[in-house]
Length: 111
Image (cartoon, rainbow, N blue to C red; front, side, top):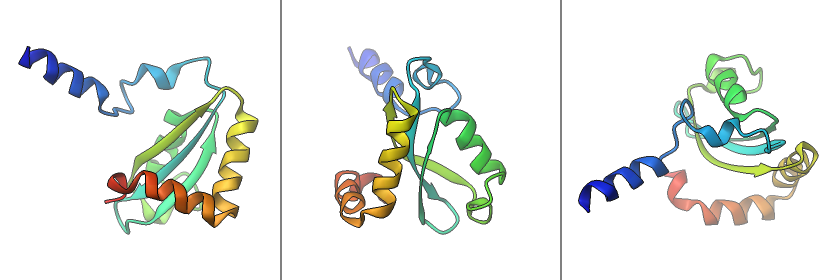
């Protein structure tokens, strides 16, 4: 019984290299929040390929974040439509109330 619990906890942890869900062809777009390990600031973005984009951020290939690397993903949302993901990203960036509500929901991840 204890061994099974340990396995399920490990399976729920986020591993960018081994997460088959990220490779799903049914996901058209992602909204994500990165936290800089350098300055603890947050970055909101959207993409059609979360794994690729996360690696680009950490390799310094994204102009707006290259001086703040390395990053960790603290939150993401999956959308069937990339257009819907872009709209959600815009909403979080332009409407401070929407972002404030999201930050309340993920307080533990912001630490």
